[in-house]
Image (cartoon, rainbow, N blue to C red; front, side, top):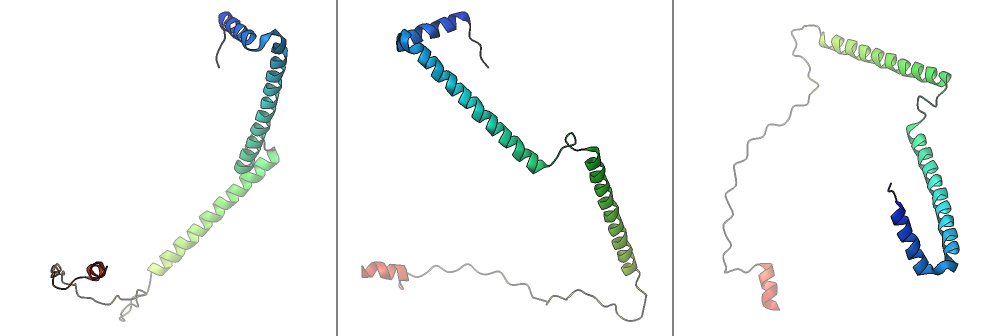
Length: 145
């Protein structure tokens, strides 16, 4: 992180002696040591908690799985892949069969619902400005007050 040389340490010791005096220095050192131990303990607890939550969210990794688990996972993935390929082939076959309808003299039946025909609307003319003879409701309220 950062390094302290001999001069920096000497300056810190002199400032500590001036601030706390020679009687309180051991007590301050013990307090700093306790604080450091507590901080490291809580830091390790937080790191462990975070790693557990990440493991739970991501699931087991390749390094932590046994050979049997890895084989089972690969088998399940290949099974799902073959099922998806079979479903796609079945849907493609159904689509191809639907495209091959017999030709008849009758009009083909459409599944689409025809939309009603509408005529295009003429563009509106801009509104004429109001005459000042008839006040609006807001203006009438203002005049009453």
